[in-house]
Amino acid sequence: MCGLCGELRFDGAPADLAAIERMNERLRRRGPDHGGSYSDGALGFGHRRLSVIDLSAHAHQPMLDQKLNLALVFNGAIYNYKELRSTLKALGYQFFSSGDTEVILKAYHAWGEDCVDRLHGMFAFAVWDCRQQRLFLARDRFGIKPLYYTQDSRRLRFASNTQALLAAGGVDTAVDPVALHHQFTLHGVVPAPLTIFRGIRKLAPGHCMAIDSNGTERIRAYWSYPATRPEMPLSDGEWLEAIHDSLREAVRKRNEIADVPVGVLLSGGLDSSLLVALLAEAGVDDLRTFSVGFEDQPEEKGNEFEYSDPVVEMYDTRHHKFLVPNSEVLNRLPEAVENMAEPMFGQDAVAFYLLGEQVSRQIKVVQSGQGADEVFGGYFWYPRIMQEQEGDAVERFARHYFDRDHDEYLRMVNADYQGADFTRELIAERLAQSESESLIDAVLHMDQTMLIVDDPVKRVDNMTMAWGLEARVPFLDHHLVELAARCPPELKLREGGKYPLKAMARGMLPDAVIDRPKGYFPMPALKYVRGEFLAFMRDILDTRVARERGIFQQHYIDMLMSAPEMHHTRIRGSKLWHLALFEFWLQRNLQPVGSTA
Image (tube, rainbow, N blue to C red; front, side, top):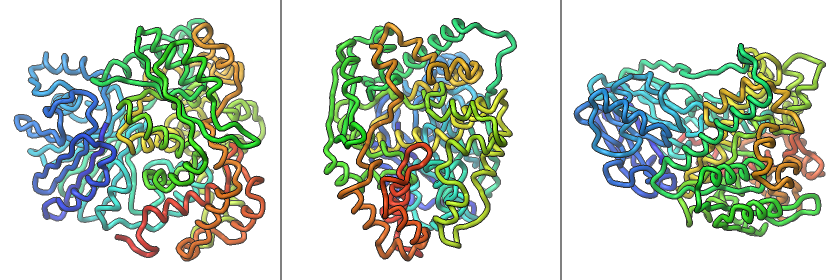
């Protein structure tokens, strides 16, 4: 797990090594163990390393193979690297390191761009072919590892976060109106290739880019999967057995492929608790678990220790439990926002940031339960969408998911940011593209391949990597997801959702954990906005820089301020928090209004 960056010039000039140094410095927190750089005329690489696999200096990056005339920067973990290494050795390749980084180099030489089809894991990487003067970039199937870039007629720059690109300079930071519409309709999600800035784009998950030193580029999707039933139907029991086997293997790989201990972020929910049970089932006898909680509000508890504690007791884990006061949340909020590559509305972003700080003092790698709800239908809106009969596909989805309908969005933003209903157009296109048997199949497929990437997955990566902590997500193992996508949605959504996981957990977890209502990482202070948190949000939106930026209409802000606890989205987010977080992120990450530096 690491941070990477680079530049490729198209104008005949050498790579700007000073810009690469600035980018690399902004990536230091992602990779505290080692930093390095490499240049070859028009191409420059920077890298920050978090040592997890092959802890020796042989695995430092940028990695150069002089015999093959290839250089590489890589962020991620390849869970089948040992098998690939054996295959490549049989083809005559010799290795100077023992980790997964060099395997990617040799795989690219052996199979070219098709090497990505063979990689099982989470990754973002860039390979430079010194002989061909050609750059190849790729991102894993679910975008677990980020890859942002900015491009003009003179150069391409890329990095693991937007802050690095901003540090390099020359970025058009004007707010993209289409991205803004997505941001406030899809619960903070701006799907690739857009970002909130016109001048920064991101490589879509499951995609790769090839570009040469004259600027000729090609971007393509290398992976897709259907959400249709198999030709030979399976019984419920066969589905449950197949899913259990696939998840067991996903958890095992993510525990074994590391040269450091691997822990579990234990929230108290079914998903993370099941990871503990499966690791115990696999024979792991030194389980390390970590939980965090916050102050209660009258409407909602701030922790789920009543559910996580019995799991800890059942499996005798080496447990660490942290209780964070609200004062600490507010004091540390600026730090968390500064480490968001994009504005994140999910209230648990700050929770993950504070938890990541504590966990990173004990361990370098954890498994986390992200993806289970999207893969196995755990959210409350899925059954509602499945039962919908009125309207077209987009309307049936929007009625239960969109944070704001288009007419409210037009009342929220000023004239410069108004336009067509961009989000409805995007969702219609994505639902139509999906190779699915039903609307709910298409919705789950879209959630897995687009919405999850830029909400929970990005949130966990940013907030843990801010502390040099690697989070692995077995529920997004692509073999497991491909299998689950073909499982009948009626089976997945049985008993309120995630039935295959609930059935698997019987006898492995306390019934109270399995049968509890679906929970969310609780951060009540950012959901029920009052007191010092309300004052904080009011102050942000009332700053001179916010007024000069002029994105939001004042009457809309006044409406939210008049009753902040009354205005929630369809999926229970605070609309006031959305506006305040977005503006605060811009303030913490940008130069003064009007600057493009």
